[in-house]
Length: 266
Length: 250
Image (cartoon, rainbow over the protein chains, first blue to last red):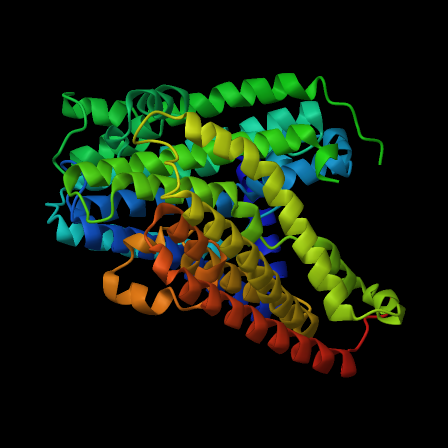
């Protein structure tokens, strides 16, 4: 509980400090809005030309896009310490100070940064979710709403866990490792679309290694009444836990990696 | 400089190959549902050539940005050379080395992929030569475009918002986000005339034969005209900037 309060306080402080330059903040937020709008535009143009993708109608595709957009940028807002700043922390020795303090290391890393500009991207994602839900005429029930919330919640942990891969590699190699982007940004680009459109190797990658399919596509396909696999409804509630499991594994590996940490000495 | 971090270059390459594969997989799925007048092999070729020369589009001179922010640009102003020309050459060199180093392995990888996934051969030998010529003109054009962006940076100091939008324009209108050949047909008539389409879209279309050889002189002329306009605009812009430049002390 103590940790949560600490996190809350840090977030409030950081957001307040970012709002000290309101014009710059607004400009950057606007830029984010335009950028994510551009991504959505690409999907709109594709749907305009091709109408549908396998069994997925335009509304379904907007829904998948929105789900990914909301989850990914939620992680970028609240997990900024891991998703953005960690490599530079290792490089400039900031991690040394963190190691000395009597608090959890990951807690401190997460408390060190926030990126409220991404709220604009979440807005675009939400619009896409709403459009998708309207076009596909989803019959919302409390159960479906719960499933959506659960999917977004666990996607947060999944994406944070994937970004920790980069953090772990970075502790070993000091340089930021572009290769890790294949799972994070690559996963985002790929899993904006339901995973069953991909050939088998990619499908396996996004189901087993980076389980976007289990955390997002299985619940979303139940919400859209077009189940991805022939699984019962309760399965859709269970599979998103894969996100938390991945985060758990990465957390353990992160702790292990820290034992090998050698300060850069700056 | 580029060969000093082989690990990073290799990592970046693998990352981009992966992105290319994902894009191709998406277009394959879309084509399976509703085939289009443009053959699938042209679209996959478009994707791979875009991935191969991606570095040409990327804003690539963080050093100059730092100089502007810290005021170190004052030293450059003292040097007895034409500032615009100096930075134009620098940007062009960075783009050229960055993309050649990455393009070659990427093109080899893409041509090894199975039928329907990879790079197809150019429409003809003359088409390939014309495409190469167009690519060089495209490089001249994109360097001029980037110098104009830099000019804006000199004015605002905090360029992140502005740059984000200019980058989006670049990525969208040059066909990197989505091949321009897949844009609505009515849009294409306008988009292909914009400077952004001259960088990679025009060379790629010449390569695949989307633009017939007879149309080549017209395409090259448009590229040349845009390059001249952008260089003249950039030059004027930089000269004006230099006259009212306030150096950040520190």
